[in-house]
Image (cartoon, rainbow, N blue to C red; front, top):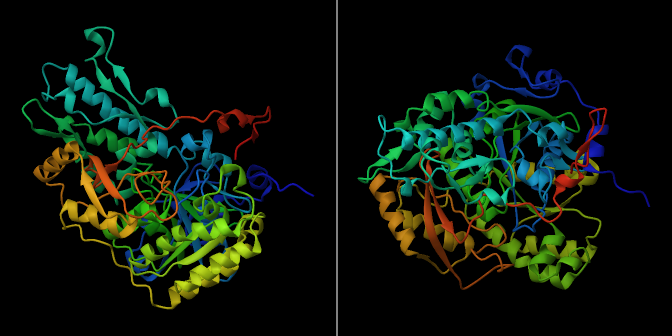
Length: 559
């Protein structure tokens, strides 16, 4: 029995076209490309045509509640884009950039998998065009300005160090940096205080990058970042530190979308990379609009499951940008349904119709949730060799009982051809005209109303409770005028509830808001549900141990 080649082997053996050829295929001239080598290029914002954006079709790929290894949203997104091209549609995938944390940790890269990948895979997963580095530097410049102001006796803002909320970031899983003490070693080395690092995708700068439409918009948002308060209670923002111009200068190229290609030579855009558990979890507004300008169908994805990434995509990004998605693909795997049915880790790969049946309520809840946004989803079963025929029929029958179609997608093994049936189902969904997007709530509702709507309608909670700290934060939100912003819920991605141990479709539970964070520059407030990890750690056997480079410069071990 032959062994299926690794993702890296497939990517390195695939023919790859010069990026100018990819650009020419969608009507972009060489003069409008900013080359990053032969296979990657930045695109200028002037290419965006708002009229075409409204005419073309936006498709969201989301998922049921995932296992720790993910259920293949990126793979299905790339496969669907290739599948749409295969059936004669002008389509493009518009995706998020990978973070080095997962690449070197447990999850591996995020360029798709098997024969549904974007390339050059090694570059994409390792540094790419430097966007994450620019976010990191802009974030840490602001951190340095804050500590410099604390040290400076002549030009001080009178900041109270106990109120500071801005942290440094690094694009790496490094648990030792979560809680640190800085400024030790005497008065010349700063003011000693508690601090810490977040991972770069958790930075508000990343969220701002993904929400900004122009340099002017970027600068305004950067200036609106909440830093903390003075000793007399005055709110201080990044603009008060007079570093906004320098931060924007660091981000000028990062604000431009990146053009790449799929294994099948179809165009793709990859830009931005906020996590969905603690940020909005979708690519940039400018990348999505660039795709909708250049292609008739744009396939994009939102992080984790539909209760996180999709809800934020709809209620934050789409409302802010005036986007109207016309179809949703809900990715599921038989393995994940076994997991929600109670399968142990060592039996996840073993067919078990009883466990799949027990796990189906999780998928059903996500289908019901997506319908609340005015869209009937297409269920995509990401095919694995261990899937039993009876298990697949159970999923298809369950989807049919809710008025949706479940399609088996073999993009991983067969590329675009394996996604052709899914592509046909998506086109039929778009052309039916039945999908009319509507947000779940209005931004002008109270903060409590917005949170309760998400918790009860999407998570299935009976209600919401607030800690004493959260109540105090709420008072500050209203005082600062942040209450008309949308809410970006931060919770575990492992459950529909705020308790990662509750699998399937939890019922009869109360959601607890522990505290709030203010992403006033990005334009949303963040209710924290439970303990959230903003700086992950490496697993016992990190993926980094397998990665190497040969004497000839060839990357090996990346997955």
